[in-house]
Length: 169
Image 1 (cartoon, rainbow, N blue to C red):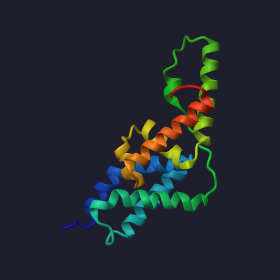
Image 2: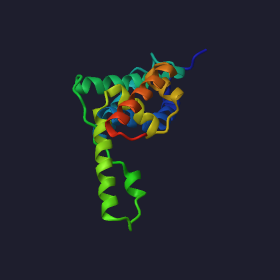
Image 3: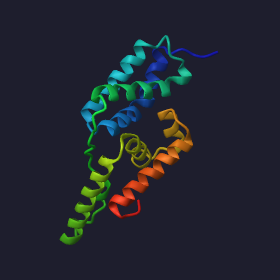
Image 4: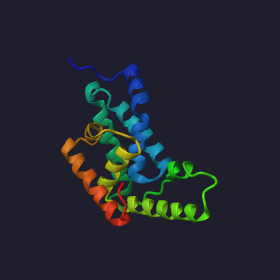
């Protein structure tokens, strides 16, 4: 027997999926404030439809709501993703040469631009794997697709980035 969504398991669902849904929307939009707003709206819509939703399918339902809200917001307009890659900057020793720092900054700029130019589906898949460290199966579940489809998207994203950067990621 399937369990319906009630107040107690809604809170658990919110606590479990809030960050993942917010990141998913952020990767699609490149705007953290918008991601926060659309994430909240996703959970409001989930609560409004709680009687229709089976607890077992709540994760995929949430991702579907979030995806649809993002698509509706931009109406197929291309989004340029502008995020900071702190890990590269944070790992730079303070005593590095100015030449090294300049090259690092130039590479970071090229990487950000190359990621932003990826088609939406490739960019989202790439960032879910590389930034959120999600496994292919988790990405497939979140995007309601096969693991093979995720593998193909990752290969294509890596190939495109490799071509643009002439660097192996």
